[in-house]
Image 1 (cartoon, rainbow, N blue to C red):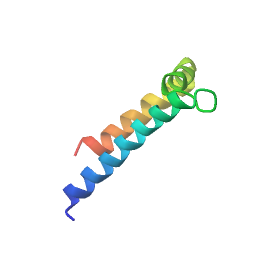
Image 2: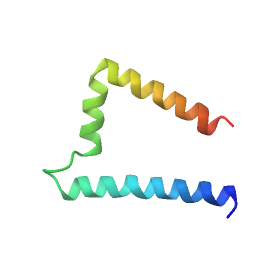
Image 3: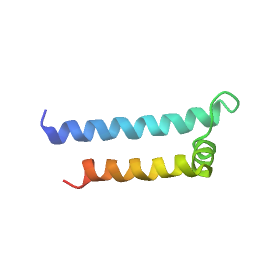
Image 4: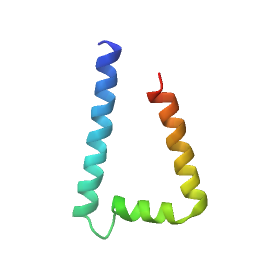
Length: 66
């Protein structure tokens, strides 16, 4: 496998896990938080919001700026 194929496989796995998380959260309404509820909880706290923004910036710098 080339590095390009490995990269595509990793991104496909990440996308599949994200879709599975959304589907599971909608099917199991009481036991798992929905993604929108989790983001609302995280983004209402100033420190968590700052952490998310800094983490997103770090991820973008290290993965997409090459």
